[in-house]
Image 1 (tube, one colour):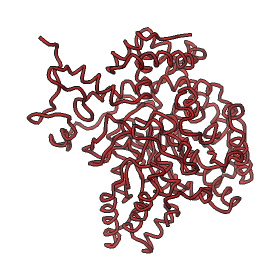
Image 2 (image 1 turned 180 degrees about the vertical axis):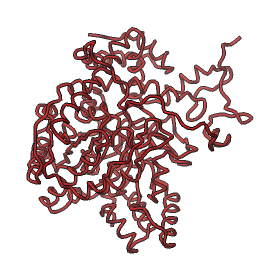
Image 3 (image 1 turned 45 degrees about the vertical axis):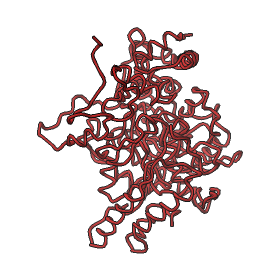
Image 4 (image 1 turned 90 degrees about the horizontal axis):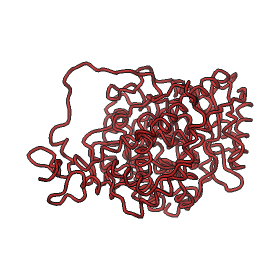
Length: 98
Length: 497
């Protein structure tokens, strides 16, 4: 039986960029024991000789002609922005604090 | 009038018996009177719908050539972008967002003059089987308001069953069109993967997501299918081939000599007795209509659910990374000196619901190094085995059939604290998504023990969607002559009506 500790879940939440309360971490850790047990069944059946399928269609690269087509105006592109400045998205600080 | 099929409404629009503005207003009035009970809609676009209807009426009056469904109203699942109209995906993280562009499905609907009434409720980002995971509260099944309308597209299915709209758009990643159709006594079709463009469909699991038609009759679904399907250069996974002739198939309904394969593994234990008896009855009717019933086996289907709950969360953990609080949607904690990372963490904590977080974390785990091969890698191999099962079975039959769901609609709240029990709803619908083929659910009657609708599922090989409509139309006609009236004529009246 696979299980994830509270700290394992905390690490996954950090990787997934989701803040979580201690209660949420503990709940998820408990639920994951059951869920992982159920999904681990995939390991029972697929042997090394089976090719994986990532996608239902046998597509490779799909190209379009390299021509300029109409796109969103800056106003449209920024219409949902939580914050903007001089026709740009205004975002919080992305580099470490000095 | 609102109880008519879309095809009947279209005929009355053509003959001048009613205008699209009148028909649209009838539906908007119906929504106003019953949707406080049903809660199928997250947003009703009164003005936009009436303006679109007026435009269709003007074109018709000017003698322009009209599309078959021109002027008929439709309910749009809130996972599809429509320019300027709020699109939430049932999530707080997109509350108030108005997309600056139309999805290709919406472009096609508008081109065909189909009037979009508003946006329907859904499980957050289409993750769920009950519509209880919507951040805006659950939708109620019009057959019994204490029960779920299915999910994730419970708003669309409930809108049809409550006569709030004759047509709707759904999306189906693991059954989100077919399971809601089954539990509300309506028709829902998941086309072949790539048959309908995903451009503007907010992605949950890109290799599984597929938009499709929801309706009250097989012919209506076919008419809508042809209106929205076709190649789209904006979606690189869209199939560049002619759309299967589904309307002709729905009008024919001739199943003489067709081989119908009953999937041995999708029946029996775990299926409610009334679900099984209605399914058996449907098989007898199809046999009487001239089809040959054969048994087929798909031994790897029993692993489909486990594989799905690795593949879909894995893809979702990647797709939902776009909700980063930077360019659109909710932003929380943007105080002086806060880092982008802390804003993102706080926004996603507040903006996502429990099920979405659960799946993102599960997907993050399944894709992490050291576990990738054991989980995601194995799941992809199971996907190959399921596709092989379908290929083998389709050598012995033209379509495969099963009950759509193991049970009829359950009570709201009954399974919300048990994710595994909730996931089991999708046991018969998921294999179709894994293989990228087409699936349809249509009403097979009511389960005797609870008086609730049962769904009959038809599965067809990729790009042979017309076969589902042939069989669906045959079964629908046989059941109609047996019942004397459509199943939805038995639905209890809503108090508001």
